[in-house]
Image (tube, rainbow over all chains, first blue to last red; front, side, top):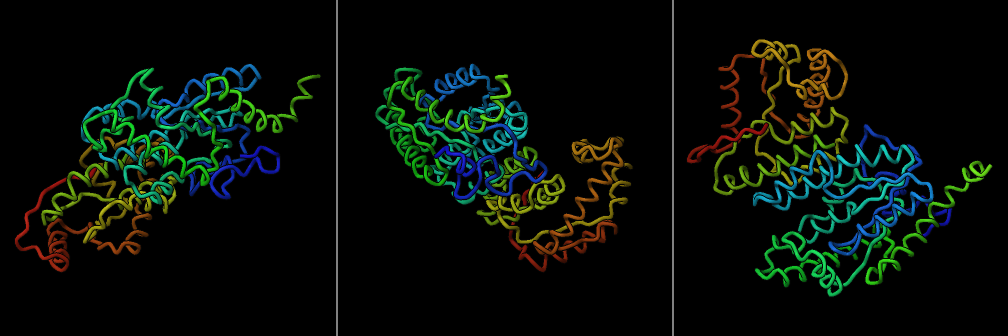
Amino acid sequence: MTSSPETENHGANGGIQSGRYYGQGIPYLPLDSYPGKLIAIEGTDGVGRSTQIQLLREWLEVKGYGVIETGWTRSELMQPTIELAKSSNTLNKLTFVLLYATDFADRLEKEIIPALKAGFVVLSDRYIFTALARAGVRGTDRAWLRSLYGFAIAPHLVFYLNVDVKTLIGRVLESRGMDYWESGMDMKHGDDIYDSFRAYQNKLLREYSSMADEFHFSVVDARRSVDHIQDELRKQVSAFLEPAEKQPEPALMR
Amino acid sequence: MTFSLLHATDFADRLLYKIIPPLKAGMIVLADRYAYTAFARDATRGVDRQWVRDLYSFGVKPDLGLYFRVPIEVSLDRLMARRVKLKFYEAGMDLGWSANPVESFRLFQGKVLEEYDRLVDEFGLEVIDARTSITEQQRLVRKVIAQHVQTSGVETIDDELA
């Protein structure tokens, strides 16, 4: 992702402008050129997204930006339903995909679009790419998935925190351990959670990588220290936000 | 959008548990409403028509689709005759077109009926005139079904698609 003024509007997905819908969008919510910016932080489970987002948020707020965070399955409407469905054994890959999409639609309409309208920087902990990757490795038709998420907005920046499975395993085991879904136990790679985690996360990482060009990910090496990663994120975020903010600044100085 | 996606999720669940298994077993599945309801209702709520069709492309195309058509006033009279209160979403109250439930129902369901009319051609639905008596309708339905389906030697199950 480049950040020069001439290219700043040509973010993701081959010709789709950042801040616009990928596909048909939501016809009853047409998007004008809203002042807010949408920044997505993507990466697999345990890669350190939330730490980076927390640091980015503080830094942006100190600089005077209004910031909101949104994250996968956090919608008020859907969170209880998704938790309930995950804890029973009735979910299949199709209903799983659709529940995630419903959650995302709710947050898009109720959180993301209003915040963009009001000029906030929206930090999204995961975006549709997580859904595309998870469903993709489970064999859901990729063209159908892309059409389903045609109502999503192309972010202004997508950071992909890239890590190798070995490093990931170390981190996850040091912190909270492996869980059923993050280990892809539903995919029946076997009874051993360690082997399943490795096989599943390997597939997920490949799936994410395959989307890097398609959706113009800015790939960040997440094997480095928290501070190193944060520095790189800040550098890219300021390069992107600052040109856009040049106009109001002199007025504020006076 | 969430209204549309929640119904699609419900549909996917029914499809995989209640529709596909009996079809595999060679049974006849009678679906009270199908994806067409979503096409009509979601389009009326302003969701993109093509997007909804793509969304439901995981569904099984029915061997036969029957559309029971009534004018809006007949539908309203029938509903008012048997229940006092129109349901919030059925009357399209979420759209804020009218604060009066009956008027909102007339506006919303009127648009829904227009959408159904599009679907008749697009999906080759068999139209049944639902103003006529139940007996007359049933005779017609049986005739149409007999033309389409070989019914001897199959069992039926009932599953309502809300």
